[in-house]
Length: 125
Image (tube, rainbow, N blue to C red; front, side):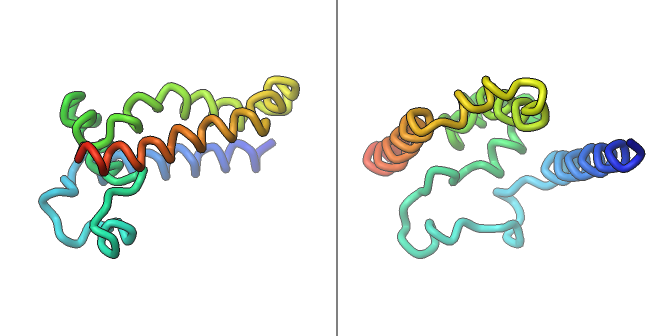
């Protein structure tokens, strides 16, 4: 029981430090921030390009800036929060966990990500 509580504290501390870091440092202003390898090599935006800017913008309540950086990521946040909750509560909701972690959902999510990759580079968004 103590181990679970300490792990939870490590998670809370780690997420808090991550959020504090991205609150303070704007990825557009600092060249030492991690860069997308796919973008550097191909010149195209990957599905996750702009994610650092999304985090920074949302922490500063700049929703329109976050949407400009990566709209799919912004609109996926409720789904990602649900998946995180489900991961931590999978023992208490095993049937829901199995339904969500199914081949049809994986195919749908993969299709959405591939479509986003193609559209954002064709439309330059």
